[in-house]
Amino acid sequence: MSSTEPTSPISPPDLTSPLAKVDPKSLQVLFNEDPEGLTEDEVDKICDALRADRAKFHAEPQARPKKVTPVDLKKKIDKIEAPSTLSIDDLEI
Amino acid sequence: MLDLIRQATLNNSAFSTILPGLQIAWDSTSMGAFKECPRKYYLSIVLGYVPRETSVHLIFGQMYHTALEAYDHAKARGHDHKSALRVAVKVAMVISWNKELGRPWQSDSTYKNRLTLVRSVIWYLDQFENDPLETIILANGKPAVELSFRFDVGYRSVCSGENFLLCGHLDRVVKFNERNWILDRKTTQHQIDDRFWAQWNPNNQMSTYDFAGNVGFNAKTAGIIIDGAQLLVGGTRFKRGIVQKDDDQRNEWHMDFGLQLQMAEHYAKISYWPMNDKSCGNYGGCPYQGICAKSPAVRQQWLEGSMHKRVWDPLQVRGDI
Image (tube, each protein chain N blue to C red):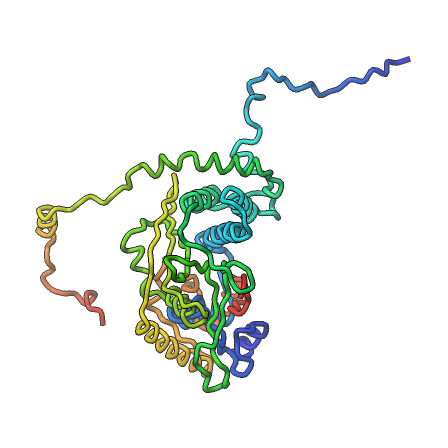
């Protein structure tokens, strides 16, 4: 008679593995699964994750265009050569 | 040509059943297209041809509005900020999910995508958590959110005898400093500076809303409050501005609107909507430019091959009326 002892081809999860410590519902995971099933906790998690950088972002100064001084402006104007005659393309009829 | 127009407007309640091609119920979108280029109006509104690919700006804007609308409704039902925010975020996540393909909405834009959508909704609602603007509650007990309007604009078609209507949808009507205001939300990739605010006055859409707020509702509105959202890769900035007009400006807009309707009636009468070839390059290029560049004899074939059809009916109600 052969043994009827069941054998499982699937090994039990190794809870000591570093992978087990990774949050299975990271923001990336939440963004890539059907949102119909999102729980309140998961929605809160999305909110917390996405608002995390808000204060830092608003604290950063906005990039402003460089101020042009009257001296810079004069230099720029001097560089421009005035056309001697108007071409037909300059006319808007 | 006439058969084409009749067929295209057969199931569109905004068009006259007496004079083919004459639009009776107008909204800011159809009037905007008409002002920009009568031919563009003919192709997009009368015949209903639109590009197969919807612009990312349009998709993003619609989703942003829908999510914020869900928040406004939840707040009006008595939810607190946290709970209403959950509703808005869930809505944003659901509408930006492609159920058919079982994957998130794919956007090529680094500024306008699913992540920036959900993030913008959260940041905006957090920033305005204690907003002094209060949503008006209508006589039927519902909040004035995504409010549809339609009213007789005071002009009648000479040809068909039908009264022209003005219709549309207001994002939200609010009370602020004892006065009523229309709130509109706008998203942009550009800086919210003087140039951004200047584009809203004069502006076809804002003038329509302002007129509707003053003439179409019992509660006279003081103006339009615009909440601008500047989308950046790393975050979203919000700024609030105001557009106000006086009665003389409203009368001027109304007169201009009447003249535009006369032109629309004239074009419908001759079944011909001319091109405005000075508009082809505006707003990053007209989507119909390639069609208009073809010889008239082959345009219909190109339209059918490269565009898809939809019915633009401003009488379709979105929210409350």
